[in-house]
Length: 157
Image (cartoon, rainbow, N blue to C red; front, top):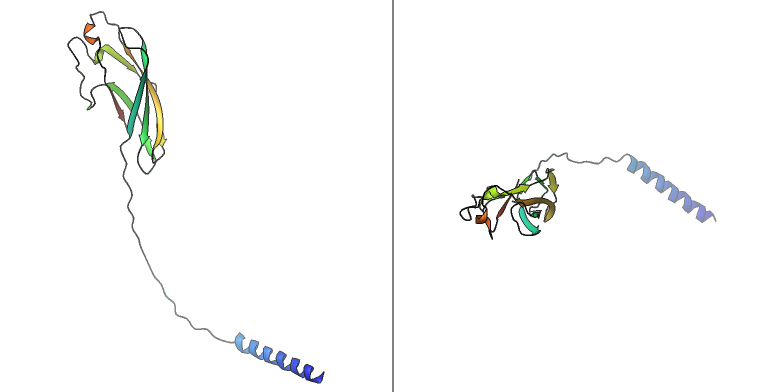
């Protein structure tokens, strides 16, 4: 038993000595500073794409109203704001439509509801809207518009 007690005293004494030495130890280090930078590129806006679908009976003076439903798609990689959509009777390059003598864009009326700006989600996000199209009943002969294909031009901004 005396051996065990002596051994415990040596372990305790050694532990106390190590703690005392470690407690007063000094650590050395260098101080430093640094800087860094990086750059990245932001994408640019992408032009909206617009598709449409027309429903209703063929147009005639004062006759049926056709409904034109359009879909605006954002092909860009970021959210894009759609502020307005304008639909006019014009060729696909937005030039004046002149089909035949005796018929013009003035023989037709497009009614667009009030447009509320909207943000369109990226990567194919869409929004839809509608306009109506009707042939105006004028007090002149409108035979020039018979069988006319009336082009609609969509402009989204």
